Image (cartoon, rainbow, N blue to C red; front, top):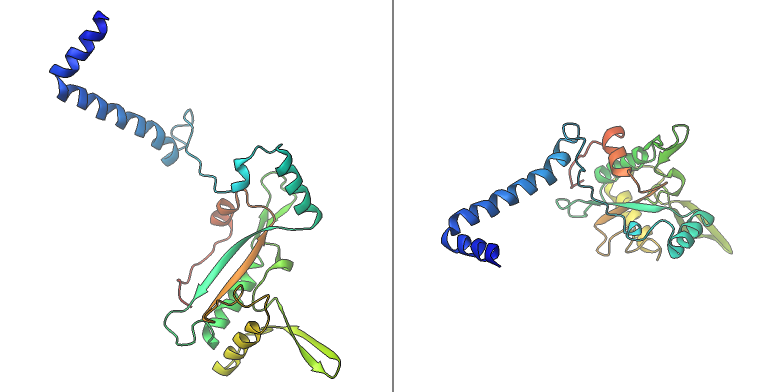
Length: 220
């Protein structure tokens, strides 16, 4: 009790020193937490901060519900997706003009090539599953082809050459419930590209070092 009273008395009599010690201690803890994240090679003996945005990792890998979930994804060939939204806020028709749809077509073709060697198995390739990409140039447009016939064709087999052709792509997409409000925005001015990935783990790091993605800005 005597030592405790002395500590309290010292804190009351020297508040500035106590405050300075608290601030110094907080700075030391911040440095210990931040330095290995900023310069991991210089501080290999400290653990860097890792941000994991995958909600599945909230559960252990051997959790029964997660094991069942992973099994069903593999059985049904399902993949997690990255959704890329493309908006043109300058053109009166949004992205549905010849120039914007040409860039979206090129972006889709580029996204299909985003593959790299697996870090776990160098002989295996990971990345975007090109066959399952959902974009204007990869989805079907279903129309009546005649009496008792159904016509299937790509929604946008090639970039439109005119504004009228660009608007026709929008109208065709909005007539299909699967695409209206998903591929095409509710107001018909934006497009979303759905890129399925073989796995989400380390995908962001893989793209930043291997994909050489060149951003052209938010508006197209």
